[in-house]
Amino acid sequence: MKKTSNELFFQLVALMLAIILVHSIYVTVVRPNADSIINRAAEVAAAGGEFVVPRTFFVVIKDFEQEACFVLALWALVIMAYKARTAMRQSRMLEMPLVSVSEGTRILPGDVGQLMRPLQSLPTHQQRYLLPRALITALSRFQVTASVQSATETAHTVCEAESSRLDSELSMIRYITWAIPSIGFIGTVRGIGTALGQAHQAMAGDIAGVTASLGVAFNSTFVALLISIVVMFFMHQLQLMQERLVLDSYAYCENRLLRFLKSGST
Image 1 (tube, one colour):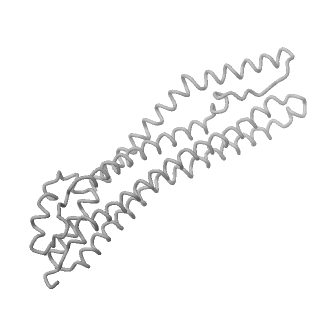
Image 2 (image 1 turned 30 degrees about the horizontal axis):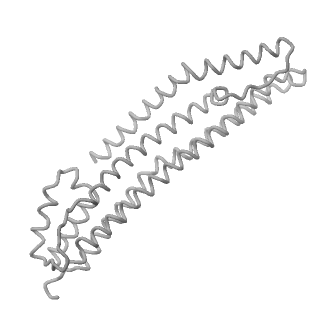
């Protein structure tokens, strides 16, 4: 419960910081530059020149929908960085000799206490990691039941439960990857609606308003889809890292511990 509360607090703080950072950049850099470029194009058109809708970087990302997409993308990337950092910390434990058993050694139920001492001496936060939990749980079950099969099933169950938990914790990131293109489509609807409302001006020969509104429509979807592609790439990389952690942890249990277990009757 404490870990869940800490992670929720971290996500809320990350969201607020993402909003503040992105909005500050938009207020101080993006929108002033975009307005300057648009005003120069309007002055050229007012002087009798041809009106051309600017397609610079600042103009393409200047609208509120694009700002919201960048906020969500930054929020998702921070959450994924936090989870990737945790997964990397757990992966480093795979290189540690948590269980030292020589080749050919038989581990009997009476030997479990000696093997568990190094695991129980780990810091509390490391004992909550997947690999130590799987090893401790498997050894405890073997000590009680003297059954190799029971210990093996226990280690497998712990790894499967961790895999399901990690997958469920990606639900917020999956929601964000769905929300980003949806916000882009909202900008498209808003832009097209505004353009239709200015149809009478286009019929009178003034197409500046219509073209600007259509620019909002297409720019928002374009930016949202690009951002969504980037976020989904990192999400799948994180998912791959977590899946490897679970598989490697079970392989560690199998190679370093489970294959040496022998019940007293064998």
